[in-house]
Length: 210
Image 1 (spheres, rainbow, N blue to C red):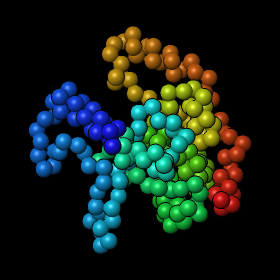
Image 2: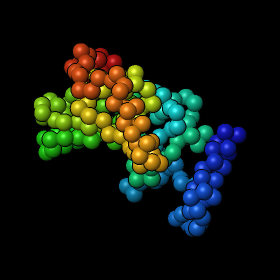
Image 3: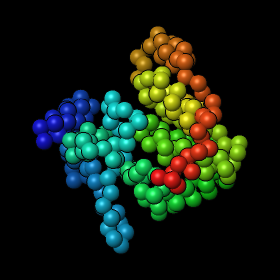
Image 4: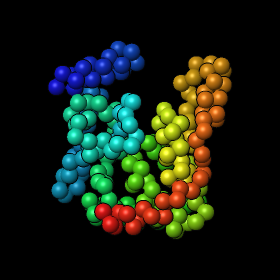
């Protein structure tokens, strides 16, 4: 509880005091709500997706036992929800089948995908879905917004997902020197982009066996 309170104070300090978003209304609350009720017949309760600072991208925080949502560690996006896929298709057969069909349909319509915040999506889920997509469109190009803070983790994601390119941000670089230093940092890393991992085609079998 103490950590949750401290994170709440930090969030309010940043948005209200530093960024001057201090008009508080019924829609613009002190803290963005983590949870939402859908307007369906069952009035399903969902939690928003987001990101955690300095979080290990190999760990699915939807499954974590450290309760990052209850600790208010997650910086949420209010326009999306977090899906709990589990370890394999056996964990949630409907969700994997439903999203797999959606991904397959999109691959038939488009020649490229952008993986938004790829480091916050479980890597085994990305791998499985991209296998389905490339089965439908063998020439599919995949660009990933990937922030792992580690060359080794960059290499892990790019090789396992067979990413064609990575998207980076430079808007937080204060001057041309900062932009140049950032380009040097990300282009001199020994992360292999576009290399097909030997286990890429084995994801579905592993999922079915799980």
